[in-house]
Amino acid sequence: MRILLLGNSGQLGWELQRALPCLGEVTALDYPEVDFSQPDSLRGVVAWADPSVVINAVAYTAVDRAEQEPWLAQAVNATAPGVLAQECAVRKAVFIHYSTDYVFDGLKDAPYTEDDQPHPRGVYSQSKWAGEQAVLAVDCAALVLRTSWLYSCRRDNFVLKVLQWARKNPMVRIAADQYGSPTWARLLAEITAQMLAGSTAWPDYFQQRRGIYHLAGEGSASRYEWAEEILKLDPRKEEWLMQQLQPAAAADFPATAPRPMNSALNCDRFAKTFGLRLPAWREGLKLMMAQG
Ligand SMILES: NC(=O)c1ccc[n+]([C@@H]2O[C@H](COP(=O)([O-])OP(=O)(O)OC[C@H]3O[C@@H](n4cnc5c(N)ncnc54)[C@H](OP(=O)(O)O)[C@@H]3O)[C@@H](O)[C@H]2O)c1
Image 1: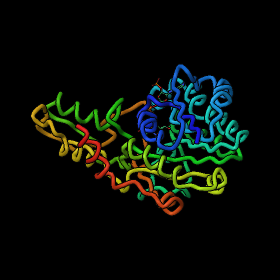
Image 2: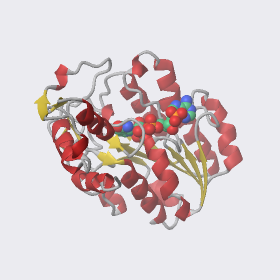
Image 3: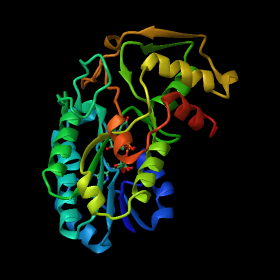
Image 4: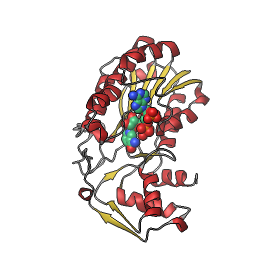
C-alpha cells in the first residue's frame, strides 16, 4: 500500500504518521510542501506520490478566525479536498477525508446520525460541509469520517487548555450546557489504520462503502463533565492554583463564530460497516492522560 498522508503536523496527522507505517510506504507532507490554499497545486503532488491511498488530515481549523478569512477556509476545507477526490478517481486510489460535528446546528437533543441533515453555522462549519459535498460529488472510493471534540498531547485543544487553566486561575468556569463526543486523535488514527488493514479486495471494498461515517469517542459529555474528568486524571494536581471548578453557560463565553450546543455523534453506522468502534470517551481520555 502506498499512502500519501497530508497534514502530518496537525493533531490527527501526527498520530496518523505514527499509526500508518505498518500498512506500507507512507509519504507524509504538510505546509509548506503542500499548500491547500492553492488547490490545483495538489494535482502535481498526488501525481508525484502516485499513492493507492490518500489520507487528508489538513484542515483550516481556526473556527473564529475563519469568519475573517472565508476564502481561505473555503479553499483549504472545500475546494482542495474536492481536487484530491478527483485525483483519487483518476488513479483509483482510496480517499480518506475527515470532517466535523460542527456541520450540525446542535438543536437535536440526541446524538446525531449520518441521516440527520447538516445545517452548519459559521464559516468554518460551512466550509467543512462544502468539503464533504465536494468529495462525495466525485465518483471515487471516498470515506468522509466526521469526528468531534478532537484532542491530543500536542497543539491547541481543550484538554491541554483545562490543564493550563487549573494551573493559572483560582476558579475555572466551564460550559455545562454544550455537548459533544471527546475523541483522542491517537485512537482515531489507529482505527483508521485498522479499517484500512481490514479490507481485502480494495479499492472496490471502499468504493462499495463510500460515504459519510461518524467516528468519535463513544458516548457524549458536556464540556463541564469533560473538564471534571480531565482534572480528576491530572497526575500533577500539586501544581494547581485552582480551588474551584464551576459550571457555567456557553453564552457566558461569547465567541466570534457560533458553536453547536449539541454535537455528539452516533457511530453505529461505522461499527456496523467495518466492525470497529472507538472506546467510550472516558476510556480514551484515561489512556491519553496516562501518557503523562
Ligand atoms: N480539532 C477539533 O476539535 C476537531 C473537531 C472535529 C473535527 N475535526 C476535524 O478533524 C481533522 C483534523 O483536525 P486537527 O485538529 O488534527 O487539525 P489541526 O491540528 O489544526 O491540523 C491541521 C493541519 O492542516 C495544516 N494546514 C492548515 N492550512 C494548510 C494549508 N493551507 N496547506 C497545507 N496544510 C495546511 C496545518 O498545518 P500547520 O501545522 O502549518 O498549521 C496542520 O498540520 C480536520 O478535518 C478537522 O476539521 C477537528
